[in-house]
Amino acid sequence: MSSRRYDCANQGERASGLIDAASAVRRGELVVMPTDTVYGIGADAFTPSAVTALLEAKGRGRDMPVPVLVGTVRAATALVEEFGPYGQDLVDAFWPGPLTLICRANRSLSWDLGDTKGTVALRMPLHAIALDLLKDTGPMAVSSANRSGAAPATTAEEAEAQLGDSVAVYLDGGKCADDVPSTIVDLTSAVPRVLRKGALSVEKLRGVVSYIATSD
Image (cartoon, rainbow, N blue to C red; front, top):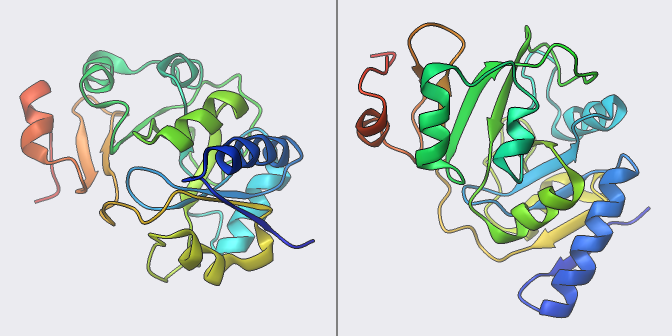
């Protein structure tokens, strides 16, 4: 089946594209969407075959589990045991935005994101197209829209050149403003730790949570 691409600068195409993309996600198919960092390839987080297809499309192993994007804070809260003493403050300050939080996953969830060791990496992106789709579909497993080892796509064309017909729907939101990935903070131990420096600076994080460990 050939993939479909929608120019979201056109309001009519944007509306049609969001409907088609949400339907594709519910069928267990893959979609590409713009985010506030780079383009993402996404699938329904609760359909294991769809997550497997996402990993295969990227050429990525289960040893690198897929992060989850949410459209609301409430959706995120349902996926984790708790945000812990610092997580809620970080969510209040920086979501939606380029901050990924690693938390202990709610043990009652039936999903398979790869070898997560009981954790989940969550983010709420600051991008209208992504948020509109996520509010319709619910939580999605989303990784950068590129083949593993290649540069992340900052346009829908770059994503399509790498991923082709493995993706059902491409939502074209124009060129991403930046290609800097999100900052990743691990909340699963007593002290929050920055695992990856990205678009959100450590200084800004420390303005909210004064003690955050870094690798250096």
